Image (cartoon, rainbow, N blue to C red):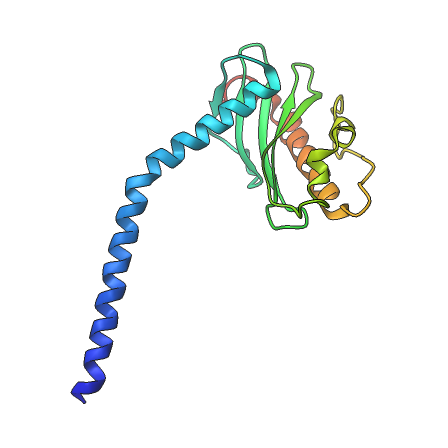
Length: 177
């Protein structure tokens, strides 16, 4: 009986120690990770609109695909959207919307699509440029051959950004109030 209990106790102790170490590591690094995400987000906003200040809005307006929204003093809005392409949540983009409510640019925060196929949505400028100037949703685009899921994911992401912007424009411009 004693031979059966000792391995269980040792394994339990190992699991407890591992859990405590993982919790400690998480607590130690979560501030740095949050700062890096904020820097990457601000860098992407600057890529869309140039050197400018932006105010982050703490609301996704009931849409879980929306990860962040930022507004510049001159009324331009950046909406971070994460949607499925071929990969689950493989498309994480920042959609720039100008003061007139039209798409003015797209920046990739991350792309988890298949290299050489799905990554074409990022690598082919003409594909991204189809979205520029669009202000109504759903957005219609020509898909990239061989990257249909990724193309539809981009279409969904831009349409989601425009839908949330158009349905909540006043609240977004006023800082989420």
